[in-house]
Image (cartoon, rainbow, N blue to C red; front, side):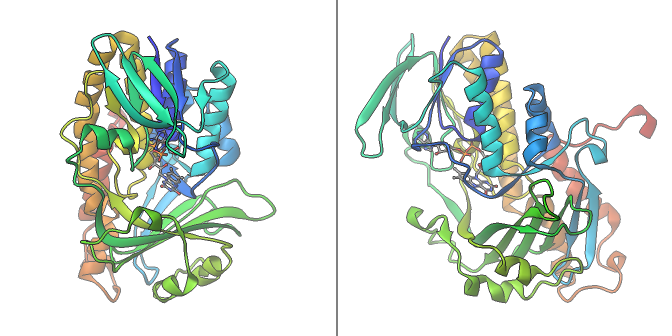
Length: 411
Ligand SMILES: Cc1cc2nc3c(=O)[nH]c(=O)nc-3n(C[C@H](O)[C@H](O)[C@H](O)COP(=O)(O)OP(=O)(O)OC[C@H]3O[C@@H](n4cnc5c(N)ncnc54)[C@H](O)[C@@H]3O)c2cc1C
């Protein structure tokens, strides 16, 4: 068996490592000329980290990321709404990691280069099309100018080519495209003195104006690379930004009014944002869940299959879970059966998360409190009960597959 993988992102590289672990040859084709550490912060949940640990990557992750200790939710006045331990601190067998997306990709890429035969990652190869018959799939790859640079045959083609997936567009020409609720995100990262215990993620505000903050690298010289995201609802949902407007360099004047409406007891937010050398503006987008991902020997994985709003720390985690299951199934079944079984397991679970993230995911905790007490509160219990808060957080964890199983001692 030989597997062709389009995309050297988090999902594609995890799949390559997982196939190699099971003795299945594969080649990764990446459109970029180089695998470069792009992006800013990302959170990866314990069940996905467990999969990376099984690949022997925990020491490499510890060298570049942060084991998240706690997650606190606040209103925009800095009043605490909810606090929960994360990863092993919460009793999971594996940590949650807050990490730079490019460094996570770097850990995976370096492992692929070290473990797989030379030439297993081919950059400058953009998936452009495919055909298939009963015996194999044939994929064509193009360079930036659109010239065909390779035609490759394999038993399966897995398109892990991200939110703008070429394969998804070929499989589903009727797909209505990017969905947008009018929320823009400004994302940056800057070296900053640790706040709270140095390993805490903070989410404040509501669906209209939200702040997400977490450290993403080990401390050096009294500072940690600290990731921040400011979300502001204000765009026209009927007019999602054109592709060329994604990842624009952000302008301070566009976010300062929103930033100044937050007050945090443990951090000078405006100073942090002003100190960030460069930050970027992105639309918060997803796509509708698909009715199917697989056609014979071709399937979708990660954001290509189920792009979701970046709430609840699930983008990378679900791509990793996809990859691990698919590799296991490919080791046990002929390619078409494996791909069909993979879709049957993963499509409903990830579609549910796409839908839950659209309504705020676990962050609905702060949305709910802000809706009931827009000017803050004297006593949280007069606004919302602990049971209600726990139900939102716990309900999401269960859907995302990382709820703790109650142990006998807890009964
Ligand atoms: C440049 C970049 C920066 C990002 N930054 C962040 C961030 O800061 N925070 C965050 O939460 N999420 C970020 N994401 C998204 C995040 O990586 C994904 O949500 C998640 O990790 C799922 O990974 P994936 O492998 O499915 O997709 P991705 O990680 O998006 O990887 C897709 C890969 O496929 C490649 N590709 C695209 N089209 C083709 C094609 N036709 N042929 C071959 N290769 C192709 C892309 O270049 C990319 O390497 C970023 C994604 C990218 C591509």
